[in-house]
Length: 298
Image 1 (cartoon, helix red, strand yellow):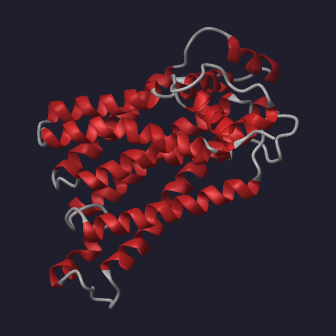
Image 2: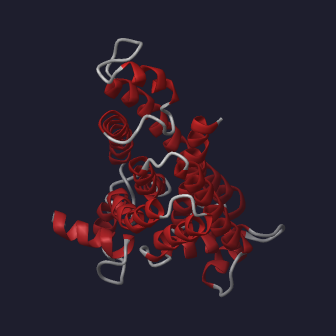
């Protein structure tokens, strides 16, 4: 049985660019390494968020710098994963393109050269949404909340990716056990809820997304709000709602790609579809945060 250091090294070997260049060949090791992909997402998110938050906070209000840092963040998300998920998304789009194409021909497109216009659209949408996010949050200067969001985007993307793999114990091919997937969902909800509670209660200001409900109580004092509960518990309850919303957007991505694979390929989703799920789930998480950020302004 592979040791934890071996599993962690394998997870980083195909989850980031910090270890070996090849994916693990052993299906058991591969399956166990898949479970740590959300951890790899946290690592990627933290590294991509650090320079973005630092420079954007130093040049707050400059639209050119905000646009530049939005591009840097999107680029780092892809570069830190060797563009593997982006290439998988491109291959998945090419497999699904066109009408009246046989499933065999669609599957053969995965290894053919070329690119899909959907890839450019995906990158363009990520840049646009991140630019709008920075523009909204720059009005209030809440760097801690922005940092949490930037770290959470690839984290939720890789949790969604886990659901793109078949269920099982990974003895013959890369699979993921349902119990471990559920554990990551529970952990994600808890982490986001507690992080929001800590940030909103002990750091930053009260003017940030999902905090409008706390504004008046914040002026009354940090010891408690109008409902009689502490600000920490109140924001944690809101954080649970937000985490569930992020996860739901990721599951919609899983459902779309699985449905398309069953309808057009007539097989279980091939490995490329896991990367496609991760990419679209990241975009969905960005859009969800943008919607939540509008609670402040509108």
